[in-house]
Amino acid sequence: MRLRRSSARASAPGKVVLFGEHFVIYDNPAILAAIDRRVNVTVHVNTSGSINITSDLGLIASFEGSTFHLLKGTTETKTILAPLCECARLVLSERGCNLGLDIELVSNLPESVGLGSSAACCVAITAAVDSLFHEPDRYWVCSKAAESERLIHKDSSGADCNISAFGGMMYFVKSKGFTNIYSKKELSLGLINTGKKHSTANLVSSVKKFKDINRFSFKVLASLSNAICQKAFAAIKEGDEQMLGNLMSQNHVLLQEIGVSDKTIDELVDLCLTNGACGAKLTGAGGGGSVVVLVPHNEDGSKIFFDGIGKNGWGSESIPVKVDYNGVLVA
Image (cartoon, rainbow, N blue to C red):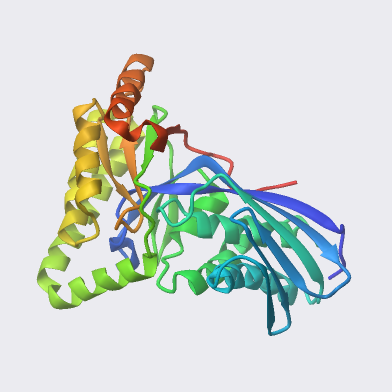
């Protein structure tokens, strides 16, 4: 396929899992929302034949065939950047073109804290490279990005790539895909970063071990998670904040049961509820990461909540977020 241009830009949003994380891997439903914090990618065709990646994490590397050149970064640089190089190579292979590329990544999503930064990177790179040839199709971008993301998280359900590509809120089942959710009332959300990074792979592995050892208990918990997602779907559509908040708290208890919460997260969830949150829970893999909070949908309630969190020392780690309805954008 011929090039239509020599450079392109794309961006993709991060996400929060409102309900159903971990259980979604076993074909249970999950509910996700894209958030208004993005990964931005710029791609330029080069004449060197190599794929060069620069990240604002302070990482720079070059990939030439099977050869890796570390230009700046740590011993983990290859592990972090190789799947992103594969994103570009998958697109180039599909388009029958062998090109050199300079790829620059700039993100306002913290990494390894449960906000879907790896999926957003894969979606944005896939879209940017594909747009060198034609106008990208979101379904195709999502499919190819998910292939690359599984190099990072081998047991990924694909949910993160779906929400990053399409935006909004969705009810997702691994074997069935997603259904968009439209709410009568805009959700008012907050995020609190515990500052503790996690390994998604290790946490997924620990949940699998729990499942294998406690088959009956896990089946019961999965059934409860399914029921919570069903009720949450209806609560979101109706804009029922009280019901939605209660369900978030119930979901958090399930995540405690499978061992992915910790003392810091549990104390932070309690602190959020004490300061007027409608609901709060960990979001993503757990083991640290972030807490997602449903904040009262009015100016006074929101101010009281964030002021209270700030007075307890979490002000610098807490931010209000909105649902992003744009998904991946190409320029």
